[in-house]
Length: 547
Picture (tube, rainbow, N blue to C red):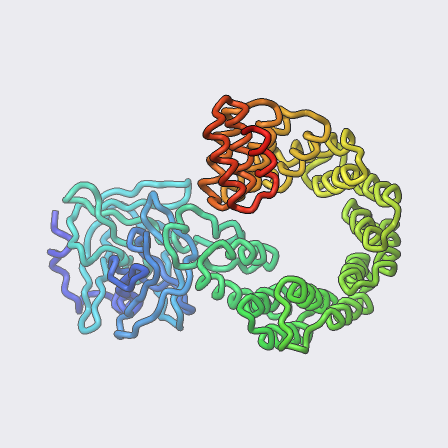
């Protein structure tokens, strides 16, 4: 059996079609994030707009890649279209126009002589080899086996039939005297049909981004998920989306948010003005602009950029509603009006919206907040909070958690501790025991009011674990341990507090009292004296008492 590179056919004997295929072969080099060389292989263009197929392994761990075509032109790999780890093949796209080789429509047969076309800028590198065996996978694709050996610099090069059509790309086998080729149709059929492709565990092995789907809804999924990728890639995904869907608001909004997060508010404003001009749904564009301004005014106000204000946000929301009167836009107006301080008008709007399709717990909750600002009676506020909880889907889900908590706090403030505790417990259940340290501190105080001291100790301990840098929690815990005669525990907890905040006078006072009660009078008086030195006026009275 002749070696792959030892065939006796001369280059000038090859058909014109086979020679033409050589123009589509390229070299591929991948690079790490630090710019150093990662790997290299060969491949072949299969489309006029940069589509190409090659081996996959060189892309694993790659941050970027470059191909050099048969004319010596370098092109950057732009996006990955698909990859298969098992067969070690992939499809991708480079930046630029390319000369494609045609993909064979039919499967080549056993003993048929095909040509492996090497990569070369100066001269043709074409050798013939017979097919030893053809296997089928996935019911329709061919897996070719050649009983010939190939050198390393041929990996990824195409096998072509007599018509110059690509049947597969060269791959090394485990056996030294065999060469394989996966059907080129398998690679060429790779497509990105869903936005979830961005989470494909195979494609995630490279930092080169995934091609965006052509369907807008799927592309939007990918755009949203791309926020979890590197900032460099996210910027590219945003540009991809804008290019593919110039009449969609979402791309402009994503770009405007990038500008706003950098403090580039003028650029963000320009982007949203462009969105309003270009977008098909003008109401959505105005509403998104209102949202962007509103969030900036709430969380990152910039007095130097006078073009944006709550009035401007309200104007944009109003324009959205004028174009397409929807409850969601009226809700947006009400929220901005609330933030502007017109609580009665906001309340009236929130309550009016509860009679629309937008009815939800959030509206009653916001109405309760407006009434709180208007200094309304606690019972009126509690009625609204009851409605907020009742408006949520039953049985309650985590969506209802904020409203249950707000009602609990309202009960707490008027001394209805049992009702407050019931809501706190329900909130903790809805949050699956993953509430904040502030919540557990709040429930600790409620449990203490009800003299449920063991439960209170559990809560304050939970708060202290969740926020290990807050000495107040440790001081409160030590104080309660002292109150229930857990003197040794109180001393240990106070020591933890002191180690965290050496000048915290309360911790020394509590520790000193616990030491005295624990029959460590001498040490206790010394600790109480330390509290006195730190300015705690109560310490002197205790020192006089226990001398």
